[in-house]
Length: 80
Image 1: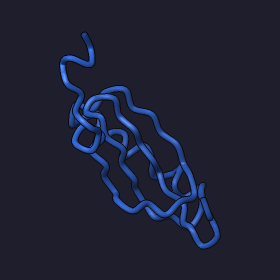
Image 2: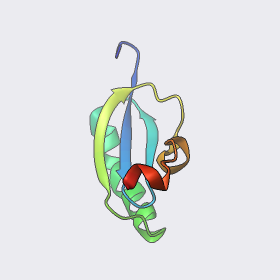
Image 3: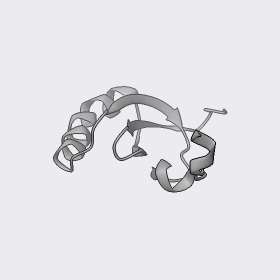
């Protein structure tokens, strides 16, 4: 991944619902670090569980990725 020109983002992945969220952009990792608590608090209030957070330089194409909708559905026979 190319990070030249990429801003800093707070990436939050939750187990329930299975989603990835990007909050930003920020000019520095320090600025992103200062804001992360509010995003986590909002997700907790919405009932999110299994929250994992990282701060990274990237260029997200979508700010919210619903992993449950974007993953292929497995048939019951696959679990058999």
